[in-house]
Length: 205
Image (cartoon, rainbow, N blue to C red; front, side, top):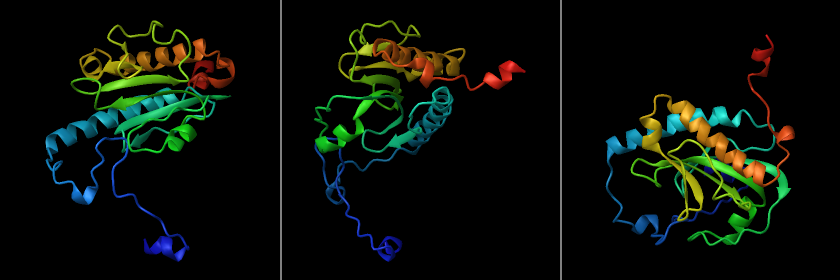
């Protein structure tokens, strides 16, 4: 705070959570007080593994793409690819989060993926598109354990399917690639201009 003040910056802080309902102010929330260190450690380990695999997936895209980053509101690890085309205004509606935030965040066509502690008994990898192209929900994707959730409007791959697979990295990579391909193909993205093989120099040797 002192360093910001030295720069002439006076930040304001919203002392309540967003993207949840009810949004109990932090200083008044005496209900959510439990802490399970083992559960926290396991989630941390999930995030480390998910980050590693998603970063590899990210390296195949040369268009505008976000870093792999953690959203503390929805509590998910995310990475988003953009086609470069404008998107229609987002309808908003996230609880206790201004609609303008969603409108700005979804200003261009995108395919977003990540890992979330919801969506399954042990969490789930997810993938969605905005705007959702026609036929997206019914498009076949891999692996067999993946499915489209009408509740969340996105494809999900339960974490336990990856955890118990003979090749977890390959299974998750297959999910990320096939769901992105569904977005890019149905949305008519210029895939030749946006994608690249990060191992291309090794293949030429």
